[in-house]
Each structure stands twice: as C-alpha cells, then as structure tokens.
Length: 92
Image 1: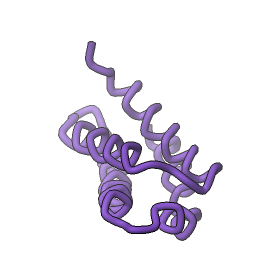
Image 2 (image 1 turned 135 degrees about the vertical axis):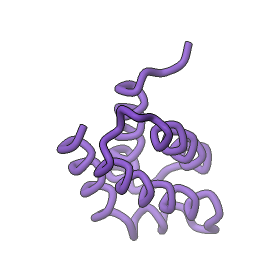
Image 3 (image 1 turned 135 degrees about the horizontal axis):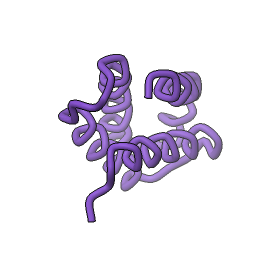
Image 4 (image 1 turned 90 degrees about the horizontal axis):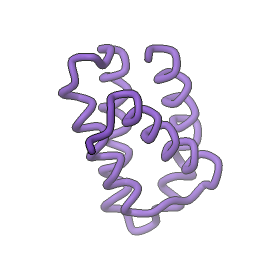
C-alpha cells in the first residue's frame, strides 16, 4: 500500500528530526529521504514553497549517501535540519 502525501511528509520530517536530535543517521535513511523527496516533488498537492525546501533536503541526502563521514555531515547541517522541518510545517 503506497504512502499518502501526508504520510510521506510525516516520514520525511521524522527522519530529519531524528538526524537533528541524534546527530547521526544511516546511508539507508539518506536514500529513503531521496526517494521521499522525488515522490513529493512530482506530487501536485505539494506547495511550491515546500518543493524549494525539498530540493535542499535532496542535496543534503544525496551528499549524505556519498560522504565518508555521515555523522559529521549531519552535525554540520544541524541548523538546516531544524529549519527545514519548521518550514515544512509552516507550508504543509
């Protein structure tokens, strides 16, 4: 059963919140973020402001997949992580 738009947004925010809170994550989580972003980007129900944020989240997750030190990548994006979640809440 596919996830609804709301479920996808909730999952995206949960992963970002976990990265922000725990200061660590996994490559699989970054790959999941990439899949969620791709799905949400083609969804016409998603606000354009959220799509702009999603592009940033995609770049973050894409770099996370390829980095040698994922925890440091997450740590260096702490401000972005909380900002993205807050802004997604505002527009969705």
